[in-house]
Image (cartoon, rainbow, N blue to C red; front, side, top):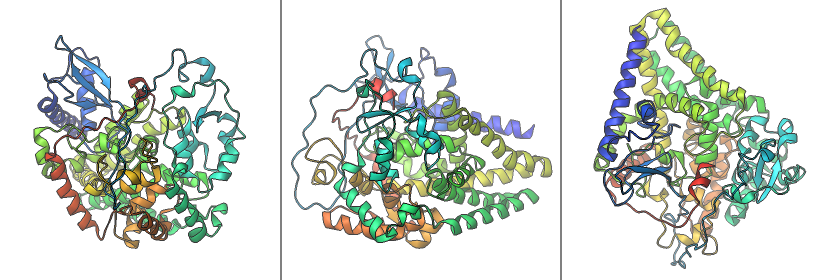
Length: 569
């Protein structure tokens, strides 16, 4: 009873807080919007950082332009005082702080019609194409069905490619692209497939910088061993340390649930999230797919969802790093937190560098609400779960039940409601603050924020067009800190640049790879963002959030895709 009442109280408090913030920023929720009755539930997830929930459409206060962003959508006033729902167009923007000595030529703005889904050519709805597990790679549609069971990384990873352009996923996950492409081209080609209906992915292998770094990594770090999976090994010792500490901390928590043991368990949950679940879900923990999948499922035990994480993190964040229109890590905190000057600014953002530390401890609860909402919506904010199997969706619910049983139910029956509440609160606080603080600094310093003006275009854009250099983008929009010890404790997330370039490589190899990346960046005059310690980058992040909270809006409309295409990502 105490647990139930406490849960209801927390739900109402958090939902009401988010509702109040939305009223201040965007005005009252439209009664005509069918999603309005669900606002409190959805807002619980959005008040936290990095959740996977969707925001409802909101009625804007009278204003000539956009007042509030939600679910890749905006509410724009109509002549009759009501609001209409519009998806935000994709912004092809870029340019970030980089050491290029000469000004580059201006980027030519595209004047072509934005792509739309052709009449009668929707491959997600047309029964002709629904029978296939289709994907698109560099303008060609393939049927993955005959390859699902034979994929060396496991079918659970290749599921991410179903129903979308997989080019960026495919090319960033395979260290030997020539071998992987040869396998891909043996698959059935779907003739007559409406390629133009599918949102186009970036093409990593078109980046001269990325190709050069990858060849050097194979030659100098793995020395040909990547053919036998050497790039997926090396983290076994770290995994044993994490599992051992986590088992011990839970034993202490179960025997005597209190603030201290809850804190220790929360630190274990954070360490799991940073290392074995992260590495496992990227397929980088082992050459054996079942080991990677098992390690990935530890995310479910600690309160998250391995399924939602893969779509949120791999399909959205990694492919569109720091893009304010696509990267869920930028989108989800808004409007509570403004991570980017390209987002609308509200009066309370001037205080975000202070109150953000109050929101961070609720990250775990945000995962809970966001995962369930994503399950009902069959998508995260930036990625539809096209390839998710019934079993994978069932793990979302089963994982929640296991988490609630281990962290809440068992301590309640063993030690009573008071002990359970104090221990569980400490667990949530400790896990959330470590994860939020670690993730937030990786991409939220001024050097890692894209702009479209100045001498940075030459490095980011290819041939003065709107086509971004994907490899350069990963470097310019990420920031590193620390060294080998930080790498061990964070599962390589302190070396964020190397992780974004090579997400399928074990984090134990990142220090060696970093030397190569820095060398190639120096040759090209590309700024390699690196801080000496975690306190140093955290202090810079703190200052940046204060600056972002008061910065003028910088809308950069450089073309994009239609609302219908946005909805198909």
